[in-house]
Image (cartoon, rainbow, N blue to C red; front, side, top):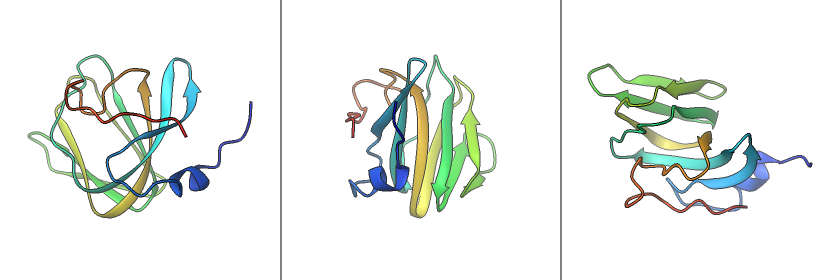
Length: 117
């Protein structure tokens, strides 16, 4: 058991849409990631998708609905099976929680690796 400093972990990389595992929690990966631009629409068929904005602002697009703005200190959960797309005009820093092995794109063929830092 030890403290994880999220700011220090985020300072270890500069890439966008590249989640890094910083802790394990009940069979889930706790990750930090930087967003800028837009991610493709995608679906997680078997799990909800958890986003906590640590710094900045992101927009969450849900097909058929107006975009939702998620600001620093706010979280957003996309229910499983819902097509969604996170995006950010300026870089934002986000904490994600996903089951171990869940591809960030919903598809193992297009998923980013999840290195542990």
